[in-house]
Amino acid sequence: MRTRLTPSDDFPEDLTALELPEVEVLNSKIHRELDHEYATDGEAAMETEIRHEELTEELDRRDQQPGSSPVRPDVVEPVLRSS
Image (cartoon, rainbow, N blue to C red; front, side, top):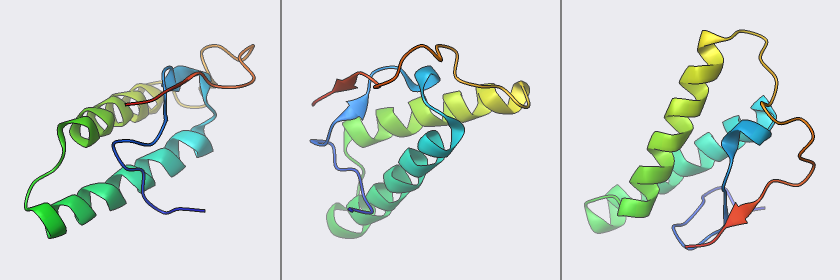
């Protein structure tokens, strides 16, 4: 299992369909990728920044609604998008 999520790796189209632990894992992988990009390139890739913002917004939304579950629990497999 990889600990970073590169800009070319698949990313869920709909974060609201994921369970909180899945969102937290993605957030951790994006933070590790940001650290890697800053260390190696001196700046973050645009796709990584966008993903970071999406994850931050989703986690903030869930913080506003304690105990919230996925918005669409009927979705079993999250839709992934590739870059």
